[in-house]
Amino acid sequence: MLSKALSRMGTGAARHPWRVIAAWLLAAIAAVAATAEAGEGIEAARGYARRGAFDAALDRDLAACFGPDHSLLARVLAIEEAARLGLAVALGPRLLLGAELSEASGIPAIRAVDADDPVRFGPLADSLLLVGDEVRLARRDSLVSDAVESSISFPYARLAAGYTVPLAVPADLIERRWTLMLCAEIAGNLRGALDRLVDHLGHRMQFGTSLGQLQALRHRVSEAKVDVESVSWLTRYAACADDSPEALLDAAAQADEMAGRLITELTQLAGARGFVLEFGLQVWTMRAFGLRAELIGRLRAGADSYRGRIGKQAV
Image (cartoon, rainbow, N blue to C red; front, side, top):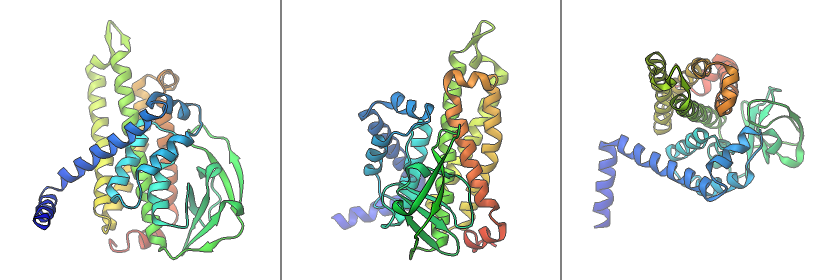
């Protein structure tokens, strides 16, 4: 009986993959939101991001809810939802980088071996992954951290690694996870920014009505919604089709293009940069800006090298 039930479930999932995605999406949203509410509440959790702080307690609680036993899609959806809610946590590095490496406990930071850029979550990193022809790991006690001031709502630091050890994990796998992580976080931050803007336009009164009732703005918001959805669904498809380099390249290209367009578009729809400070839109748009810069860094770190590793089956 059990084998027949499992067989029917597997057949149903194969025939209706989007139902499976929808189920995972609802589960991820429920888990992330419930964990945030069980702590100080979502609004209090968002306050950490607005202050440029880090919610260490919520980060640990969320990390305990997800792990390598969850599917890649489930972890991507959780990362996207945490970004949409504007939580000050390092769920992306934990679930997509740390989950692949038993050696990298806690919060792993990552950068290319030949780069010297500020590293996201550098001040909090328990380890540093250096990605080149191979992946090398530097633990916290061998790291020299120099914090960098930033308005992007992420903690940054330049990290110098002393003693490093090689890891057996393939470099192309870590690069794929790195890129997928950035796409998921960009998707979540763009969705969160749009949600925040729509709420603002619905409550901001001007010319005797709410701004959300103005047709010109509604058309532009609708177009922005389509753009946000395109990033989300291409990223989710890339998580489902983990063996397809083309899917990941499509998601990365769309995340890059849409983030570049929507950061400006959503700020303009809010009225101007000064207005976004009234309702906190900058938390999401500035994060998307920083994530896009990191993604572009990956895409530009030698197009031949990038395509040779991540998209070698596509070219």
